[in-house]
Amino acid sequence: MVVQKKSEVIMYKLTLTKEQAAVIAQALDLFSRIGCGQFEEILRHPTIVKKLYKLIDSDKYLKSREEAQYGIRVAKKVITGFEPNSSESIVVADEPNRIAYDIFQVIRNRIAWDEKPAGGMEVDFTDPTKWSEQPLPQIEQE
Image (cartoon, rainbow, N blue to C red; front, side, top):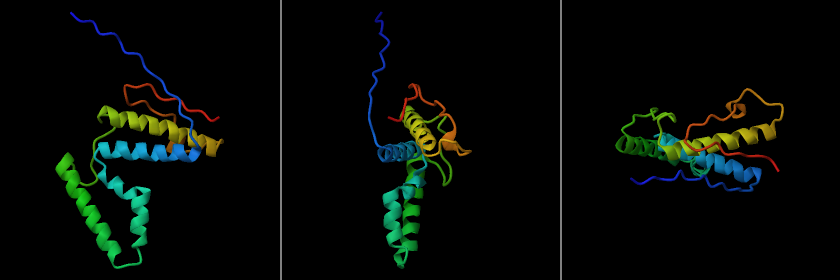
């Protein structure tokens, strides 16, 4: 019988600007959403929005947006089996998606409190909920 040792958790420390943390939060949110089948979120990526916005005054805008939405709907159906506006819950998502969402929540919460110390009613001010098997990361302002 082979006895496996419980692996230790290796911790890292990363120093970021608020802007860098915000980009990481956006990336993690997108990663977790796509992993849950929310392919429509691709059209909310800042670069995609910018490219589509450049077409807004042209005849190509509506056609380009409709074709992109159609392609995303087809890819979503083929890959995940999900219909438009349906996806998997973070509760049952694969572990990488839950890890990404946990980290996203922690960063989102820190930025919200740093920008508005009095707090607010937005979800950003809610204490992050742990969904993954990993411990919630710690974040603090320097």
